[in-house]
Structure formats: structure tokens, C-alpha cells
Length: 188
Image 1 (cartoon, rainbow, N blue to C red):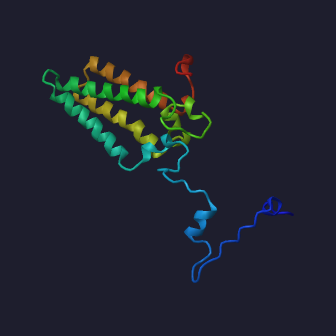
Image 2: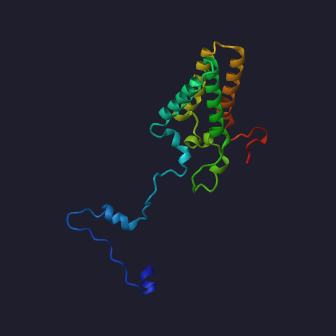
């Protein structure tokens, strides 16, 4: 077998020699042997898959919902039941839009467009069902629904609004609806 350097006429490069007392596979040796990914902040092909598992995300999410409720309570003409119902409806509307309606990824991914057709919920944890982050984002609207129902004293008007709002975010989370587009809505 003829080496490429012998065909081109160039002198072959000598193999890297270890210096005295240093193992041959040091980082400096590896630097010359492999291409380094300088400036890459993560190793994920699609960062959308792991962002909800990142450190402090669940606490930030809960604090955001709490701050929304405090802001709504501070508006003078909102009663406590109205503030709880608005907290629930605004939370669920935001969750529906960001997790179930918006498709694709804000990052350039090398997956050849696979993420372009998936919602954030479908990309979460690479589509694996019943992970801790999926359980958290499934149980959080249910807890908020229970709180809103309790503080509105199960008033029929608030109860219907809160239940409808809850169902709009729970039904798309079902494993049976992973990748399903009902009536072709949000197909492209």
C-alpha cells in the first residue's frame, strides 16, 4: 500500500513523539489529531430537546407563574377569583402557544429539517414519553387548575373557563397524539 505522501512527493510527517515523562495521548497531542469545536456551548444536536431539563428551569417557570399571579392580584379592579382564572387561562394559553403550536427550533440544527416539523413538546427529551420534565409540565397546569378552582369557590363560569383552558393544554400532551395534526391544523 502506497501512502498519499509518497505519491505527492512530499515528505511524510513524523509521528508525534512523547516528551520525557509524558504519556503519548496528552491533550496537546490530541489537539493536533482531532478537529476542535471551539465556541460550541453545548453538544446537543437540537438544544430544544434538553432546555427544559436545564438547571433552574423548573424554579424559573414556577416563579414566572407566581409573578404573573401577583401582577394580576395587584390590579385593583380584579377580584381574587378573576385573578386566579386569568392566571390559569394566561398560563395555559402561553403553554399551548410555546409548547404545542410553535414548530421548529430557533437554532440551526444538523438534523436535516426533522425538528422543523415538530412542536417543542414533541422535541422535548427526543420524544421519549413520561420523562421527569414531561411529567412536570403535565402536572403544573393541573395543580394551577386545582388552585384556581378552589379560590374561585367552584363558580360555574370560572369552572367552565378553567376546565376548558386545562383541556386545551392536556389533550395535546397525550402520548397518543404525538405527531398527530387534527384536521390538518399546524401540519406545515
